[in-house]
View 1 (cartoon, rainbow, N blue to C red):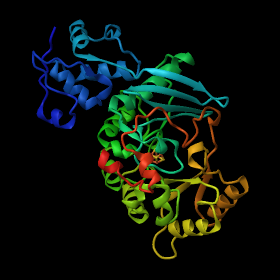
View 2: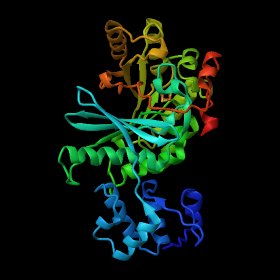
View 3: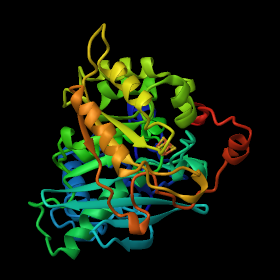
View 4: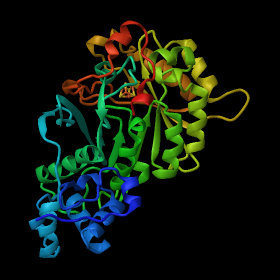
Length: 403
Ligand code: SF4
């Protein structure tokens, strides 16, 4: 049976993946692509009322169902239409690795030789999922394994949300918690592979699904987007989906940050901090998390400490509202970089605390399965020639042009 969908113009503009169907062109819609507003438009295209879309949304995201036949409160006629017009297609799992400290890393196939990684980090009072937003990353940070792999493509909304869908429902079954009352994943960090704000159009609907009470119902305070500093998109995120914000800072000066986070050449530190400060008008928290990966002899010396304090607690002007997360570097062979020694990490942390800054040192988790921060590296068919550019010292912020 062919189903004719008559979607409004607004839907076609807002979501290019929803296309009006003709009798000659039937498209099976991937329902993991739809936030609730898009699901309602899709349902209306099938001649259904908006509440049917909400029911469908709950079956998929809260109950983890893919088979329309099992969605017992949907009318039989709707189930028949859905079988022809839609599917709920999760990402194929390639591998699962479990760390001795409880961290789980999943490798998912995203096609054409690309694979991405997702990491679950259990703690006594929360379950955090670190989600990837791109197959690879074009920013090319020197301390990041993903950055060394290059960039293939943006993930779709379905591919982003599929990571949460899979983790939540797989872990529920494993932990024998079939109930919808208790969530396994309480926190999401967009800190996996990729620069999320370089995949903005697919990120925002995924965030809306995460926050939706009819789906995962995550708190905005417990949903964090981490960025290397894509200034125009920081401003837009505040309007579209204001969640907690983390900035990958990693250096106190433009000269050093240009080397460590090449996007800095396009958006220097002062501009990025201004955008972050403005973002706080919309954010669920009154601070931005600053991530600072400590690299032995590169950004961990006394001069770097002083410069960082001057940057965030300037003698003139307002303090920058932040919490600093110091991350001991997780080495990988291509980088040639080393982790700062424990004494230097403590010295760095103590100096920031003495200066009145809020600062924590991130506990490394999942190191034995290469799941720690900066170690994620699926399989990427690079189309950026990043290795050539890196060899020529020309790793620049082409990420903006690619997205
Ligand atoms: S740290 Fe983030 S932005 Fe930088 S290369 Fe890695 S994934 Fe990309």
